[in-house]
Image (cartoon, rainbow, N blue to C red; front, side):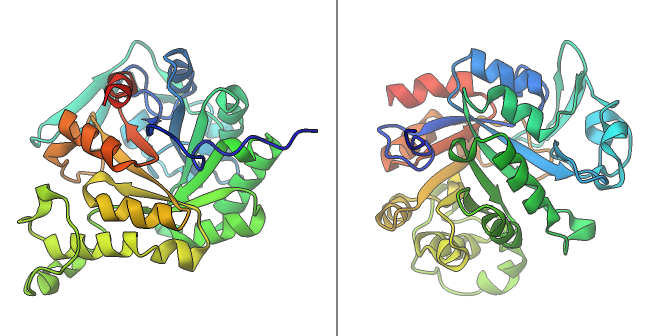
Length: 320
């Protein structure tokens, strides 16, 4: 038997992989099988999806811990069994939060869609697209890491270990994933607001001597972002956690970031360009919707770029 092909996220590449963030949310509701199948039809090479665990330990594709925004029912995913969750539908009129100007965004779709199991999605599309599985943090029960073991088992059972990476903002979930299945590539996620709680202190200091995206040079919290950039390029998370990939907000990534990580054999991807909106309320950087930012990231040599509009991004990446 031939050995499995190298994971495309990790392999060398001439251009970044375009990743459909939660599928193709411009056309279908986020994290739905309809959206993932549309990504395949459009020729999108990769998708990103979010995973949470139900009360009866089933891995489901859903972003929010509470289902109010998605289904109209105010209930926690972790408190519902799969039999209950499977009967709910993601709304045709879906709030996507705010756009870059602070305006409310509501996406409208043709029909309601069910919430799928992770196993269902991987079985349907993981041989056609590669998949970034992000395990979400359960804030009310942050100490629980069983989601990692459940997700790792689903990936192993569907035999797509070399078509998938597992990412998270919770380092414990990554360690638990590697412990459960060492063949699965895992990576820590960096958000450019992760150190904002330090702004009151760090903003009083002179500018730290680390690389920073030009859009944040005079931004409140610029030193926190400089420090995050430094943590990225020094490979601290990968060294500490034994990870092989990094996901980072595009605003944190500069030339030295990519060079330093690649030198250590770490693949780096960025998120999220051409966003429909911010469902968390976090402000969207003006550069997120610019063609210049696409060209910058391609020129830097990042390994993948996540986007809410992969059909728009693909020709820009390949033409850059």
